[in-house]
Image (cartoon, rainbow, N blue to C red):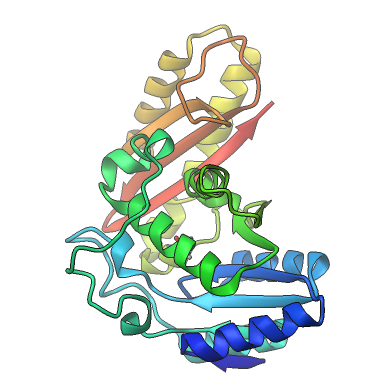
Length: 282
Ligand code: PAF
């Protein structure tokens, strides 16, 4: 596996593969790789000739006071995991390569307002502009035929799809199912922050999402009532809930009974850790 930190050699390698008519897939990550990331690599290998992974802890998507400085960084383990998985190229730039004029400079940013100003966007102002900006940069730098993203970050996935649609990017965005622990907890780099006691509480997030899905399918209660009940169940389980929401999958707007293609989404705090998860319904 080739490891590159600079843009010119990355572009040169991509050009060479393109000249050989090879199909290129991008898996963008912030490192601290787990089985969820490796599922993205495996799916990419099925669909492309070359797999490019990126590791970049993007400061632009962390608001002041969030966990940028403590975000887990495990470069050696990550390189080894990618190498064993058969990844072709790792692009792992320093911050100055991605933001050469510094990120406090007025920087061109990408905004996807239709999908960003709701759910996590309310609780993490500016977060999705940071994600959209860096993802567009990575798509331009690697010009992939396809890019794969996990369904665990469902709002992020829809924002990236919309970004590609609105800005006429040719890259196909491929969604990959969430990988879970045996007890249902969605894999996340942030799970490493949990204490033993919190880790025992964490699977209740998926359980409550399951109860929301059951209520949608088996009861006649209104959706707002189901959301309020889920917030109560989360508090009882030991979380500080930010939101439990029943939305339409396509545009993430509030859903009503009778609509199809729904999703239950949630964000909670557990001690100092913020967890998100979702469950598609119907
Ligand atoms: O999901 C992530 O790890 C990040 O948000 C991404 C897509 C790599 C952008 O920094």
